[in-house]
Image 1 (spheres, helix red, strand yellow):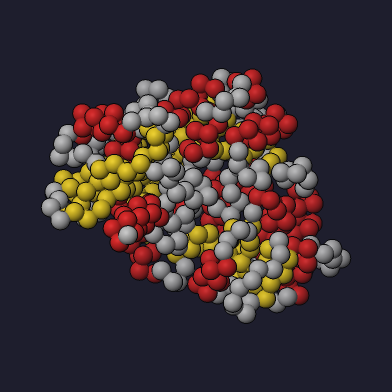
Image 2: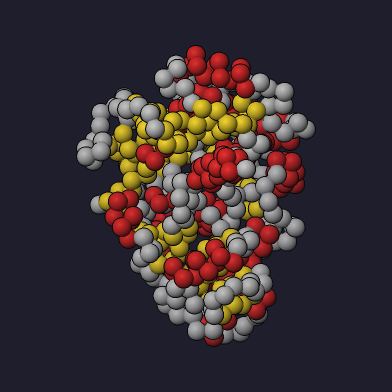
Length: 471
């Protein structure tokens, strides 16, 4: 494993230092079932990785938080999970009386042998969702679930080195990144923070043959002015996941990776190791692929009945890794609506075609009912992104006294672009009845994985309007 500053940790050193951490944590009273908040982050990759495994060896549960989380976010997570200890780069100023220890303290060498107390059924970690449409929810994973997820996707044996800038505290950074590399014995380099130029530099230094990207990262990489295809020549496999990818971005990524394969991956944190994936193919640019690694997919109507190919409904996912997943006790009602009989309801809308390829067309919570007509925010976003002057777009709904709801498109435009051109284009695509209202913004609010935080966008747009009216 390689940190951003080129500090390294072998797999043997990782386990030895995790044993030291487990001894330290045991002395601090951590036992089987104890919950420990870990302030994990890319700048402290090695220390975070050591502490994570050390907590598991004690039989404890890791409550994974970003090392730059605010005091309020830490307090909320500690209170909702009952964590009795906080481990991180340094102590944080919070109002709760919870013991804190630094990585330096847990990294002290010990000569005491340690026998792991972890078992497959006990809880391994609690990872919080990205919360793009509401409050973050903590998702509980067992040790069995974590291992199945990390081992789920087979990695070609010839691939040796992974480089990425995915935030470590996320499900993708932790389970799909860190732990998958541990299971498969892959050299793993993580950027301190993602930057397209930094990624290209790290690929060259490591001669990386595999990279992870979110759609936002992929767009930044493909539009990097100084990018030369020769600098990506070593890459054989590029996974793109974390949000629905713009087909145009996938096509651009496929072009610049002349010797590599771009794999589009669909899944959600709640579903764990259940994934749908496919190598990018120009004949099916809108599809996210077929189920992989034992994943099952259903498309259901509102009465939870399976729908035939071509009919849009809610997407359900299931795999061996999803059966034991749940929300923390703070949100049991929400969990009963999401985790149903070994299946996970994704909240995404889509359909399967006759050959079993899955297509995403929207989100259950992102359907705007305009005068009795259901308008998919995702479909409108996809269409608007085809206009050459639209850099980014997010469609939300606002209350309307006549229609019930009105679609609102927040757009980031290229320099010197005129909104009238976009409005004319939209009218030709949607017609006057389903025409969105446009709001020009400088940037869309995004989380650590680059997903648009729509509830923050709603607050930003409508709070701004209220402020203007009151002035």
